[in-house]
Amino acid sequence: MLSERQKEVLRLIVEMFVKTAEPVGSRSLSKQLPYSPATIRNEMADLEEEGYLEKTHTSSGRVPSELGYHYYVETLMQDGTQTDIDMTLIDDLFDKNMARDETIERAIHLLSQLTNYTSIALGPTAKNSRVKKIELVPLYGELSVLLIVTNLGHVESKNITLPRGTDMDELSHIMRILNDILYDVPINQVSDKLRYDLSHAKIKQLMAYNRQIIDAFLDAFTQFTQSKFYLSGQSNMLYQPEFKDLDRVRELMNFFEKNDILKLIEHGDAGGLTVRIGRENQITAMKDCSVIMVPYEVNEGEQGTIAVVGPTRMEYRKVIPLLQYLAKHLSKL
Image (cartoon, rainbow, N blue to C red; front, side, top):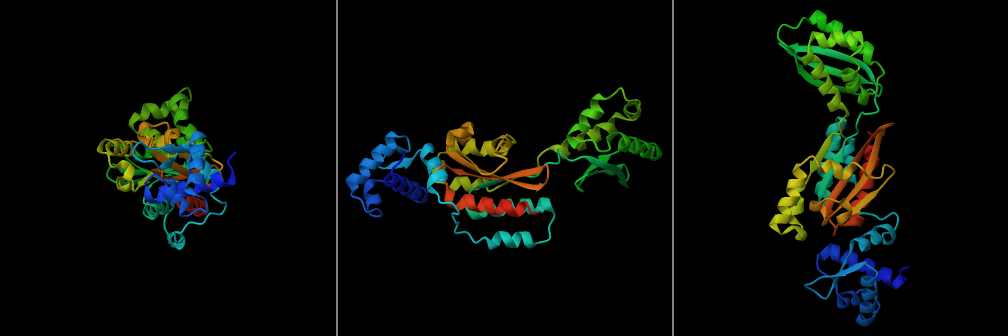
C-alpha cells in the first residue's frame, strides 16, 4: 500500500518522464514538491524496492517500471481525466455523410495524427449475422458481382469472374438453390455448410455444375467473416527516442507490416478499456511498447476495436480519454 506521498512522487515521475524521456532525479522533483531532496530520495528508493520504479545505468534518476505505469493508469489518473485535444475535430468527422468503413478509416488516421502514435482498428465483423439473400448481378462479359444481404441490413459484395460460356439460366437456378439452402444460416457457418454437407442432393448438383463458382462463393463468405483491419501512423514510432536503434526500428516496422498485428488487439476486454504495457504483449517487437484498446459496438453481435500503440512512455492521460470518446462515436454509426 503506497502512502499519499509515495503516490505523489510516483505520479510526478511518470508525468515528467513521459514529457522529457529523461530519468527523473530527486532534485528535479524537489522543485515541484514540498519535500526535501533527501526525503524524496528515500521515497524513490522505497518505490524502487517495491517494483514501481527502475534505475537506469546511465543516470542516477529513476524511470517508471511496467508496474509503475499500471499503477499510474489504474490508480493515479483521476476519473474523468480530460485530454487537451480539441474533441470537436472528432465531432466534425462524424458529422460528414460517409460510409461506415470510410468513417472508421478516417477516424483511425485522425487518431494517429492527434496522438503522434500508431493507430489500429478492427472493423466490426459480421460473424453473428445471418444470410437473408444472395444475388448474382452480371456486369459485363464474364464479370459479375456477388451480393450477400444479412439480417442486420448489411450488403457485402465480391466480384466474380464466371467461366466462359456459363449458362445464365442454369446460374439463376443455382442462386435459387443457394438461397434456399443458406437462408438464415449464420455467416460464419456458411463455408462449412457448403464444404462438408455434400450429402445434400442440391449441394451435389451445385458441385457437379461448376467447382469454380462454388469456390468463389466460399471465398466471398470467408472474407465476409474476417475482421477488416485499418492501420495508420506506423512511421510515428520512428520519432520516439526509444526507437533510435536501427535494429529495434526494423523489428518494429516488420511487425507492423505483418497481419500478426491483429493478434495484438483482437483479445482485448470486450467490456471496456484494456492497457497492455511492455512484456505483457508477449511479442518481442513490442517489449518497449504499450497498447491501449477500447471496444465499440455498432449493432448487437457486431463489435470492433480501436487501439493506439506507442512507447511505454505513452501519454496515457491524453490517449485514454481520446480513445474512449472516439469509441462512443463509432458505436453510434
